Structures are given as structure tokens and as C-alpha cells.
Length: 260
Image 1: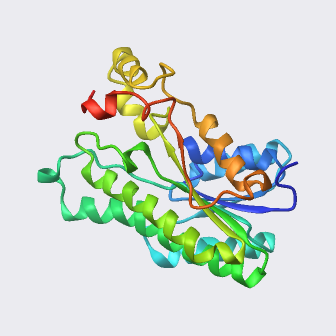
Image 2: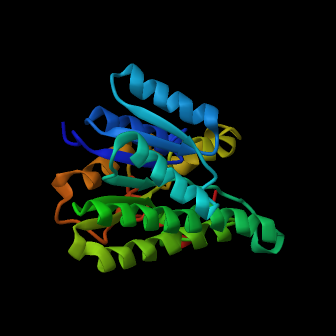
């Protein structure tokens, strides 16, 4: 198993990419802590991990609160004795133009997506330093780290910030054996996108056509990329933004400003 004897913390692990990632890491031998604000969703992920023979832990946390990011790391170490992998996946989206975005909207989206990622990384790095054996952080960025789509200015701002945070942390901590990378997904079949796709099959088809592969992605396809970056197979990879987008960013759609 590629992650045997390692411990991972996956934020936003109760659904979508987070759940797929938690299950994939557990399949490869990691003991996995799942941090999510939705307790029922997180417990279901842990149930699935344990049903497959793995070890899991549910931590209910609002990662927009700095104290909760520290507690998530501490709870993981208390349960499993160490931390080797952090997957910063928790995110929220507010679909509004800037003229309609309130201060509360801004605070919530930046609090979870950017501040939560920053401080989870801080406390994970402090734990890695105490252990003295390095570690791996995988941040969930987006194609919106590079390309803007209409009506999500606040969300795109946070994803651009995560890209730069990833590079900065990689530079600061590579000498300690701490690797920091990010994944930039395209459109993925997740609960965050469920209401959008529920408008009709034509919406799904249009979204698929933005990708060279001709379809939207599945959470498991992102989880496989997370596994690679978390494993020793990526031992020479740090500061990288790994685009997993079915060819979205290779095509003309972003350049032409195509919107759905």
C-alpha cells in the first residue's frame, strides 16, 4: 500500500472531492481524519472507510475559525499519534456579481476557502516540524485560479490566493522535507455544482463541451491525483499546480470567455 503507516487529514471530507479523497487515501493504507462542518456527512465518510477495513475519525469543525483549524490538527494527532498528509479541500461558493456580494458573503467565502486553508497549513506544518520527518500538503485550487468565470469573483479570488499560497509554502518549507502542491480541477460532479446541473441535461452537456475530453469530471478522478501528490511517487514534486481539468484550460473556452 502506498500510504501504509501514514495519517491524513482531509478537510471538507464529508462529500464530493473530499469524500472521494478520504476513501482513496484509506484504500492505500492511510488512517484518515475527516474534518467537516456537516457532521452527518463526515460520519458517513468515516463509516465507509471503516466498512472497507480502514481507520477513520470524524472531526466537526468550522474551518473559517482559526481555533477550529488548530483543533482539527490536534484531534488527528491525539487519535492517530501523528500527521503526515493534509488535504485542504474545504470550500464554499457564493454565486453573485460583486455588486450583490455582501460583507458577510465575502467573509464566509474567504474565511473557509483561503483563511481556513492558510491556518490548516500552518498547524500541519508545525506538527510536521515537531515530528521532524517532513510531510505533504495538497491544496485544492481550481481552474479559476487562472481563468475567471462570470458571477463568482469572490470564489475566484480565493482560488487565485490558494495558488500563490501553495508556491510560497513550498519555497519556505522544502528544506524541511515538507512538500506543498495544489490541484486545479475543472468542472466536477459535486454537491457544490448539483443545483447548477439540476437546471437540465443541456447544462451538463454545455459544461462538458468546455472540456477537451467532452465531459465533466468525477470526484474519484481528482482523488487519484491527490493520492499521487501525497505518495512517495511525487517525492520530487513541490510548488506545483497540477491541472486536472479534462482539457478545459487547454481549449479556447476560457480564452473566449465562454459562460454557461
